[in-house]
Image (cartoon, rainbow, N blue to C red; front, side):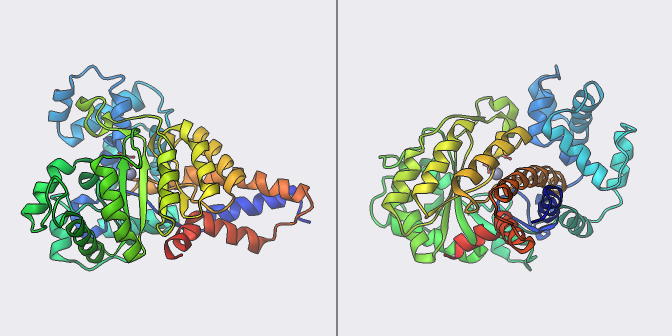
Length: 412
Ligand code: RAT
Ligand code: ZN
């Protein structure tokens, strides 16, 4: 039997070194050009930091947004790193990135940090970040409704095989009234009142974009009041278009539930909030559509236990990630422990949700630290019960947690 120390050491080593498939990000294949964000200024104007920065800034919102990105970054740096210590998770993340890239953060010299970034070329920097974070594959978030992104898909490009696609359809499900006319204008015979060939045409739209993107799954974010069944456009479209499409193409449907969009619109992307949602909607979908696969993450801390219980009832439900306001060490630890205790290894404890390439480095190093710690405790408990986990078993399990279980679920 390995000593507790060496068992812990082994688990930590394996978690630190196993390459991860990051199953939800907002990063782009470098072929998308400027849509792939990277560098110190992008890190500083990340919306998590904008929200925190405004707590100290007394500049009017409109004035802030009228500034250049560099000027905005200057203000955030000053508010969150110079005038206060950068203790929050998002602030610490910036330091982890700089430090991992070998840059000296001690000098608190933003222009110097900027000058280091000026030396990088995006292709090399992509490889560097993926290597440092030990990320083997990144799933993008790809919207056919995005006017910047759509033309790139329509033109076609050479895919970087490290970046895979996910078909994001929020406007279709949560803003049907405004989306129906747009679909109609682009050649789909849909009607706002769902009459005629509407559902068949939405399926044609989903199938065409799935093919064009080679989308691994289809996804949406939903408000806390999401209900199923319901007489809402979202529920009707899910039942009559998204799920039939999923069954026909063997494609999972990902739901990110619990976001309240724009509670403070002045903050733009940083202005969204959280609300408790009813897990019954997820259970009803899983029960009624056993031939569909559902990937679910929920935003409210209070929903995590109910979601684990649901996953115990339905094998067509795969729980993933510590999303957004949950992506903090204390909550990742709590959620990872709860999930391991309730559903074992049949889940994906984390995704990064990165919007800036460099963030891969901090999001994964911070998460690996916690996943490793919780997992080590769990193997210790097994050892105490007379079960000797072997290195090969630990490696197998960690591969599962870092993307393997997810890939198997998609293929099942
Ligand atoms: O975490 C985030 O960056 C949010 O702004 C959202 O993008 C969220 O992750 C989402 O995918 O809707
Ligand atoms: Zn996201």
